[in-house]
Amino acid sequence: MLDQAYSRRQFLGLAGGLASIVGLGLVGCGGAGASDAADKGSAAAAESVSGEVTYDGASSFQALVEAAAEKFMDANPDVSVSGSGNGSGKGLTAVAAGTVTIGNSDVFAETKLEADQVKNLVDHEVAVVGMGPVVSKNVTVDDLSLEQLKGIFSGQITNWKEVGGDDATIVVLNRKAGSGTRATFEAAVFGDEANDFKGDAELDKSGDVQTQMASTDNAISYLDFSHFDDSKFNAIKVEGVEPKSANVTDDSFKIWATEHMYCSKDADEATTAFLEFMLSDDVQGKLVEEQGFIPVSAMKVVKDASGKVSAK
Image 1 (cartoon, rainbow, N blue to C red):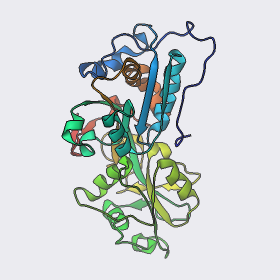
Image 2: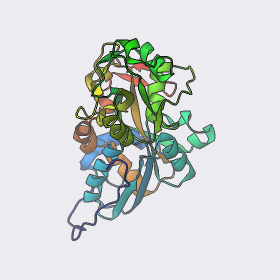
Image 3: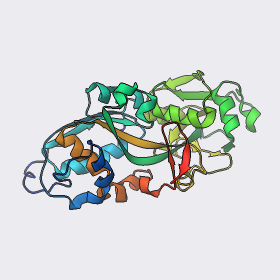
């Protein structure tokens, strides 16, 4: 599901029977309205919108976008929402070029695009997610320091016995360049230090990591919390801190990202309406947590485009 394009279902006989969840104040991509959209929720004026919304970008929160899109289309049967999760870099490039109306990203657009491209985009921060290392079920290590992760993902540490595990070669499953998940993970582990180590494989999407980890012994990779699956692999501690959302909100667990949805400043009505819905109580009040994410309002800290974390 995560790696497939999502298109709206056909709802027969619903036109005129369903009220819209967003109304006429469609200013979410114009700037000021984006910060107020969460207060509107389903109480906004009930007037239907129509059109096509397309997106590409981070696979880490594609499931959240899909779930919200279905609810939005239920209430707006004349809108089609469809998209894919081909990585933050591709999503940002696509929205800047106008080939999609929304670019989903784990990282700020400033880190992937030129300044003249960024100035034409509006950022909507829709959720926060933790990301952490995962290991094969046969691996006995359950805690790694940032320094140990740095050694593994730079190719300096190659055997599990070097970090307290069994005598077995470490299989490193990395993400491809352009992945926002990779950028977030490496920023936390390597800081400003460049790292060009590819590992034993470079995978496209979060779903690919899930599949490969489930079938590979002695492996290590990293995923956002919403893709953790303890039936296939084990999520492990970092610096003794468990990978839980509660530990992300105060930055005690250091690997996390804000999930961004970018649109152009002159985005169409349907796109603006959908983004307002993403910031509404209907999504932020329940759906975000149901999908394994953290509402932006729950965070006690914020992160800027440079990666600096500060108290709210």
